[in-house]
Image (cartoon, rainbow, N blue to C red; front, side, top):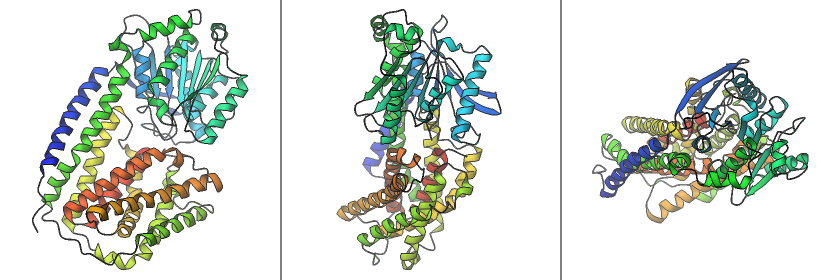
Length: 521
């Protein structure tokens, strides 16, 4: 069989990807603000922080402390942080315990304790003045920001889709709450509880002067995650911040000043976000070109045998039953608890159970992929590592902390055998890669298989009280990653003719996703 050669469209995509990377880098650079990386060490906590300083010659009128949500990090909040700094405010964006670069073990109590300790430390050292400081938090970070009211008398608080919480003894000064239209019901209830506890909406100038302003705003079309990149949310937050800092100035005047801010100042966050997304697309467009080059090094692709594959309906039934049985079994205990990864120990346990069940029912097909071709598998491993290192480096620069630190590399090594079992079983259930309508059907079945596992975990949260709320919250990211991973694995399998190469590629990427995204406990 002839080797898989480069096609014109692969070259065209690669050229476009390079152009996107160059433009993305240029846009990011044009939107960058002076920043400094520090670690706030206090009270047994080691809290990494990014300080964004505005490009102004006079003293900033105030400071914003930015707190991210569960399974996020300070880099995900870069859009909001850049918007605030672009309008003349000093910004501290923190990594919470077990997230991003923070290697402290995660728990909700530890995250709140360390965030509060970090802000108190900044205040004691004269780095911030609580009287002109506003705390902005998303999800878990929103709940922590609200809870700080019992410890630090800041000027204002903004909570984007705050997580359910025990209300503080006193409500925060000048509290603004955002709630997205497509939030989980429990998050809508948390927002309404804050409205009830605050006694209703108050947003007159005298309310800000007396530090008792409150407003709950619903974002049409907003999801839990979209709020942190919503231009309207950022703009409304900036208006609220200015009212907290300058309650004596009419709100119409403050709004006009914000609207008339110079383009070069006011659009820093949007430049960085647009450039980051464009560069990410550029890396993905390079994938087919690089896959073909690497696959050609493995030699001519072999033609896959057309085996008697089990009906897809049977595979779907097996996964549905295995996933439901798995979440029921996990009510007795989580076998992978030793991994010390919040929610991922549960999620991986479900994947392991589903994988073992599928391997048992498809054991006669294992001989079709074993033993693997050593060189093809090596190429797949190298390619998977190259993919996640390049994506991780780009994301880590601007969008999210996807670069593995020491503890996360250790988790990656521990997770990989589990993902190999699951991805191997999944590849067997999907069968050989064909073309045309058969390939489209195979991809659709893959989506349904992943959906069944996700729905089982979601059902366990709502009906079995599993407590694994992070899995439903990550629904969009899990879906996008699954689609990208499948497309990449199929592209590699087509170019090498090796199911084992696709399995190894998928397993490495899934292990990286879990190790990079889920908090460490």
